[in-house]
Length: 244
Image: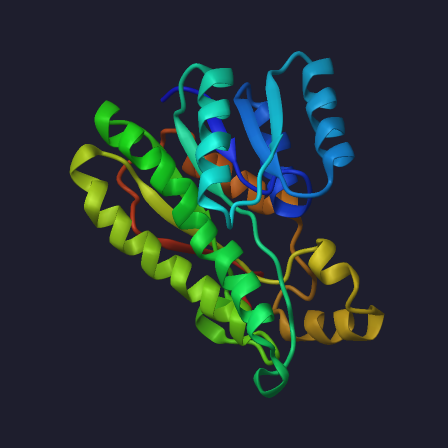
């Protein structure tokens, strides 16, 4: 398998860790950001300074036309595309009885429709060339549910269904499509929870700690290594035993 990949939401958190992990293994990487241009450009500079090849582009993945332009730019920069990691996501947490339509649509449009927008702009390319691999980052909340996150949980459950259906559609072309479902991971999303809440979460996890973004990145790397071509349509959980 070649080593040219597109990652969405690569400027922070799990996406950043995946970009850095793959770049360290010799992958040429293109990723998008929505707001944090300085952070994204710093990641690219670090990769290039270390002998790698990377580029970043601003793109709101909830906008289909912006995704079309982003994928075109990525293909032009890379010359080819061997893999896609859909990772970008947001939260707008509140109880359903307080949730406003905008809070629902912001999350669904980014976390779920965004995956469609990006993948739809690339899947024909993969199918035509009979190659490619896709990883969709979901969450254990997609099958456990979390209070105050009906929008987020719905989007993550949708990603699982999206992955399983697409995996069957392209299996005959030998294109694996899989989900990674992290549990509680040290990230921007967990940083603002407060020490007491973090301790409560750790108490629920059999390993008694939060996961690290780098651990998720290593799993993504393994799935893209070419060593697992017969794994497709699966949801691989990485949560310290939380959902066992």
